[in-house]
Length: 119
Image (cartoon, rainbow, N blue to C red):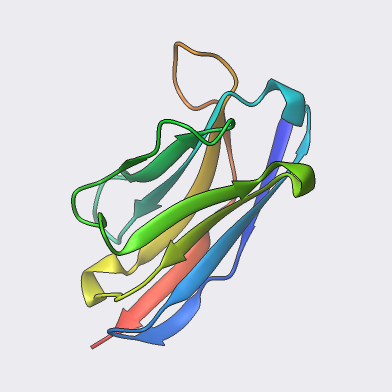
């Protein structure tokens, strides 16, 4: 199994920045791909960004492209989401997730961290 713990959420004004962190532990050698997702109140969970554990194949949702950046530190088993030029519509609970297989769904999830952007 893989355990994930997010941190770094908080309250920020529109236009500000936050960096989310995700600490992975357990069978981290099995991670194939990691991603960030978010869920706003009353909305479905949506994809934000993802990258392969190797660092390749980075993908972003159109809504965050150019503002958010996903990165990782394999030596520390950490995944990051740098969020710049935040907007009120970025307010959500942000989740870190990993896939351990090439095919299939993300199979391990963190508990989430709240990001609130005030206008």
